[in-house]
Image 1 (cartoon, one colour):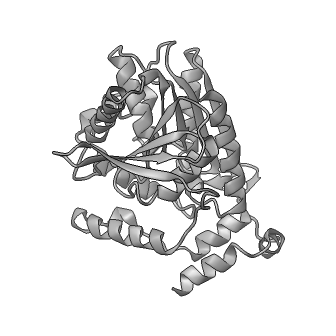
Image 2 (image 1 turned 30 degrees about the horizontal axis):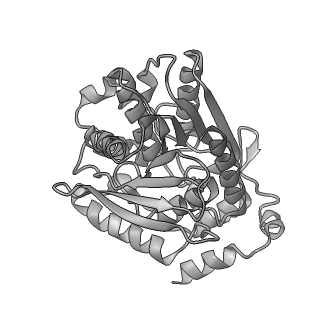
Length: 336
């Protein structure tokens, strides 16, 4: 309770005062200064050594994180009510889509959203405020998928569920060319893996993909993952743990729907926007993925926020994070 109280107080402290606290102790990497308000938030937040957690303890950790998310709001609320509807698209397997309907829509496209959490943590509930905010700002209906988590559901279970969700949306009056895929972190990986799968099968593909700091490379061997391996919310050890829980077997490493950097896109691949953060261990692999798409002649745009971190899109009460999210949503809206 005291921790939550202090964090809520943090959001009301003037930025100039927080900057003053770190004036002579700035965190500088690659020529950029880590956002001071984010840094102070990290100092107050609880730490989890995920890589030390046994499989049997994962459900308890999920519940703990869900409770903390309920008791501590890190995202801004919408200005007007966004209506939600639940759709059970596979009752036998309890597969659910949550639809978000903003007070006003101004395009015919819809978004299929996948939440982050390393394929192991989080849910459509932990990302409820984030997706509501996106829906309001984009003036677009969004469907958020409650896909099965690992290690109970290994690769490619979530991808197959996502493909089923696209089929369900298509059968319910939505042309696949009007569906945009969006996700953060593992959810961004899931979005890209779906687009890869459709491309590999030479099926009609989606309208676009918007990838927010995607996990791309299971080797965890980039320069950024070493440089930012600790102290920035997502750690190198946690990332390796996520990949291990998600992987079904070693052969998965050779598949381009698992390791995104193995993909050989054709020139008809969907328009892609990739969001990266300067203090994110995954920034280099996301940039490599962007370059891979660029090399093949596809439309790709990278939006880089050098002072921010992995996970900022769900923490819009931070002033710099809120500014960045509003900025990238404006860019997303241009291609919808």
